[in-house]
Length: 241
Image 1 (cartoon, one colour):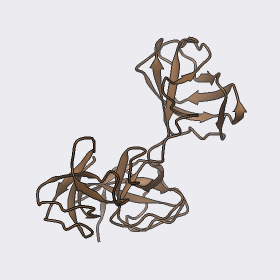
Image 2: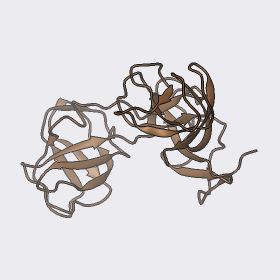
Image 3: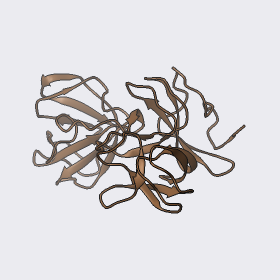
Image 4: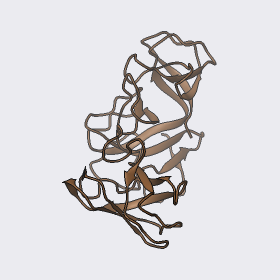
């Protein structure tokens, strides 16, 4: 049986699906043979072994619009940022994710989000950060948010809507917790013919959850360990972690 080699004291076995979260989402562990795994929560559908998974689709209206979200002025050292635009966000929808300051003052800094107040087509959502602001924000500043990439993972669609987080190794039930693989040999569906040793990436505008030979504009997720026929599963050496 594969055993996890990690500093994590309490963990969930690799080939399980649990309704109860046991450790922090995104926790990385390795087996003794060097394979790597990330702890995730499945989205609205059960994960399918051998298919590529991505982070939940982005919300480009309420979380990361082009140009960013307007904010009220906030002093250095404060843990709270008030969003002044009209938004719809459930309470703590942003918790566990990250805030980036897009437009100066304060641009280039990254902050982990602790939580947020609920707003429904309203202004003045208050976002609480894990760490204090390092540079004061003004009304000229804008911010964007990305949710925790491992919270609500989905099968990679034909056209990507967020980053790749791994390959499913077990049918984690919808809304439950388990592991996806990010490093080392794993069986993956090919959506195109692949040559042994070739770099592979996500298959744009193709079979959902599949990979194909890497091309410009697609992320490299690993290298084929055999010659793979389209529609079949074979081993790929993942390099996501």
